[in-house]
Image 1: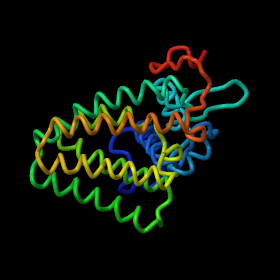
Image 2 (image 1 turned 120 degrees about the vertical axis):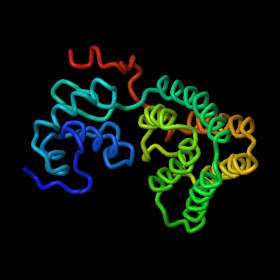
Image 3 (image 1 turned 60 degrees about the vertical axis):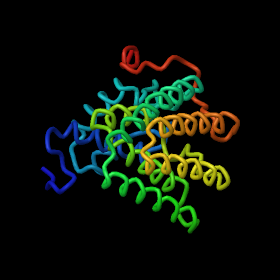
Image 4 (image 1 turned 45 degrees about the vertical axis):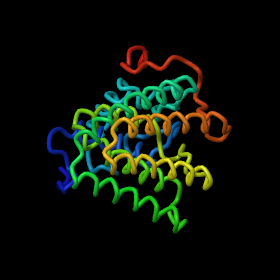
Length: 238
């Protein structure tokens, strides 16, 4: 049995592997459409193939992975309809989350949001971070706000954010990246001012604006096959 370290599972190895796969998808280590081999993941995570196989079945049921005959498992590629649905859901949910966060914001919370904003600003100004890294910093800014609402809010929003990967980020375009960050500045100002309504409205507009930019860009528009995605997993295994 592999020696455990700080990132080893506190509970089951299956849950540990599932969490690691989700993390790798969210961080762009595993890309949409990329074939996933159990033996490779088992070696990467320091476990046997069994928990990897069980974790992959669980993630298939959650809609994270998909199986194709004679091809194997891969990360589910987003369809245009799914992308549109996710942006609309995000706009509504994150608007409410931003309002709740500002209503419950503490001085320490404001400092955390400001720090996340400054980190992303520095990365953009230095022009050294790659788009995937900027995407991660963008996520950290938004969740620095949402974390001030409640753990339940964060857990719910993480489900939506997991469907987007850093490779698909709008931060690949420098002009768009700076436009998005200007919008971050307005959201931050609302947070600092304690204006929960403005924070919610600005957050919704920010997300819907990103959706519009993505739809207009052929390189970043969702290209997955236009079939119904089954998020509860029924029908995926056949």
